[in-house]
Amino acid sequence: MKLETLSKKTVFRALNSDGLRFTIGGFNVCLSSSVPAVAEHLLSLYGAFDVLDNTAFIDFYTALEPPSKLRRFFRPQVNFSFDGYFPFKPLPYKQASAMFEWGLNWCIASHSHQYLIIHASVVVRNRKAFIFPGVPGSGKSTLCAALVSRGWRLLSDEMTLLSVSDGCVYPLPRPISLKNRSIDVIQEFAPDAVMGSIVKNTAKGSIGHVRPPDNSVAQYNTPAQPAKLIFPKYDKDSNTVLTTLSKSRALLKVTENCFNYNILGVKGFNSLSNLIDVSDCYDFKYSNLEEAVALFTDLAH
Amino acid sequence: MFENNLIGLPIIAVIHCRFWDDECVIYNQLTGDVHLIDGMGVEVFKVLSKKAASRIQLLKNLNSVFEWEMDFNAEDFLDNLINEYQKLGLVEVTKNTCA
Image (cartoon, rainbow over all chains, first blue to last red; front, top):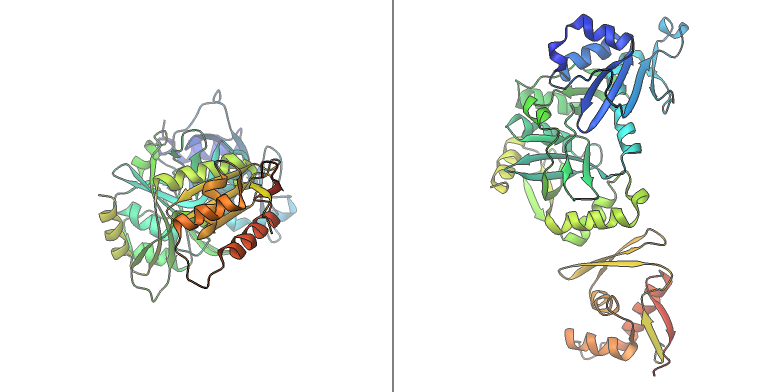
């Protein structure tokens, strides 16, 4: 059953009682929250996700709640918890939906060492996975949202899950997180993209999430073979420039964008080496999204 | 400097080498460090990843791959290279009992 088939009242009630249970990629999540913005966030962006019944195994029990009753009235705050553990300091109440996304990132990055997790967006065209690693601000999510809006399959916006056992990239299709100017850029580039509420004044500035395409969510069980490893760099004055990067240098560069490379040790090194073996590697500078999409569409043929 | 020695990958640390084109990346399992190697170093590790070698064997291999400038001192260059790799824990120099 898809989340969008539930009434608003049912979603609110589930979040306020034992928690709403749903599947995100290969993970089962249970979320409890009395914060209305969290329910709105799920209803607008997670509609295509499968809801689970109470018997399903849950990977991550999460909650978003105000830290104390007093805080409901005076500078209200919200806390993210995982299995009763609070990994972060509370954030302003209005940032609850963004905190859910960040908290879930933390859950997956900290507990999923069956994958080498690369800080990268990953999209698929013609069964070829294009991986875009990058630090925040490199433009990887903007590129990802642009490609997805033109029919590319979304595997993941924030984290590329590279299996250490078979070398495939496993899907984690979740809302695409855009920051600051990227929000306007994508709203202009893809006016049909569904965007949730904009959360302002976060530590990262303004945050907006784009709903993942329904067909990408539906393929949450279908991994993809990596084909291209591309390091994007958005530069407002740049032409569209794709430069071949040596495989050795690409490996060194991608190690800097991994969440758990050090934890995996030699398995991590071998996984990355195998990824590099099968991928063409590039540096990519851009400012024009139309040109970028056209270039990658050509490259995917 | 290493005339009577055998140069090889360390016994304690496990060194993993991956070669692509004219570069290689070396992973030291003991420290978790990754090193990018290019130029002559790649040829050195191509030899050492198969088995330990003497300085003369390494020089012979390098001579077969590279053409040196007249004034280039390959022996000094190799010694410096081995010295650097030794400091990084990527190679080990032992007494060559077969010499």
